[in-house]
Amino acid sequence: MKKKSKTDGYLAVSGIIFLVAGLLHLLRVLMNWTLTIENQVVPLWMSAVAVVVTWILGAELLRRGRE
Image (tube, rainbow, N blue to C red; front, top):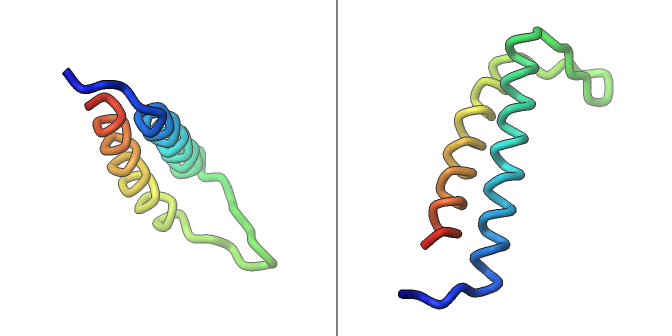
């Protein structure tokens, strides 16, 4: 059995942060929220891509944090 290190905790916390960020992007898509950055509207499809990317990263970080 592998000894737990500080890195494992950091990976797990980072994974949770990524999953929460993905959830917020999903809410933006489902609720049709407008996001404007310096007078430029960010298209909803970017948030749809962000949902997939952040959930993949979050799941991988959680998996590595539990190894």
